[in-house]
Image 1 (cartoon, one colour):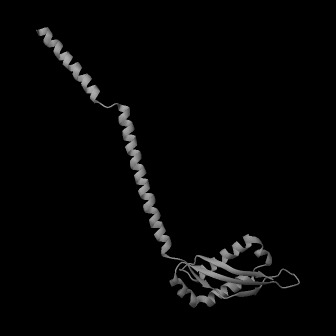
Image 2 (cartoon, helix red, strand yellow):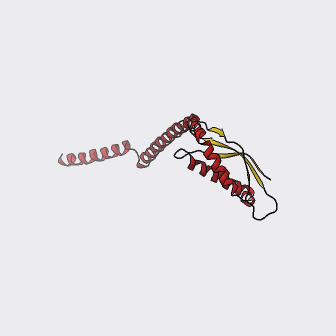
Image 3 (cartoon, helix red, strand yellow):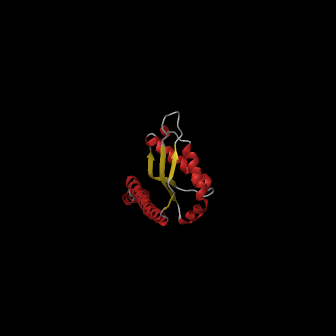
Length: 166
């Protein structure tokens, strides 16, 4: 009997090992399930931030529409380089402001802005206004000068309504 007792525990251990092996999930299946769970969590997190972020950006964009202020028309003679006839520049511009409060601040300094425009535009030569690059430089320079005159406030842009070189 001693021999049968010794063999039974071996058999019972072997049976338990086989039974536990049948109950365990394969390692590949566990890895696939874990990867799927992580991917699902990532997609959910990304979708949440995508939709929450776009709605916040849409609200921020709708809050403040720009305000436009017309400047008086400016007519100046351009700097000549020895040519026979004088050329003139006629400009109508609009200032694009970030909010209505800045429009009230610009009205008292309008004479200063007009002086700034007049003195700068009189120094231009006709060749300074050639092509779209020349007009872009003019727009950027006028924006810079307006921002310097109304500092610390800032405008968004100077927009052209009309430009005539004659």
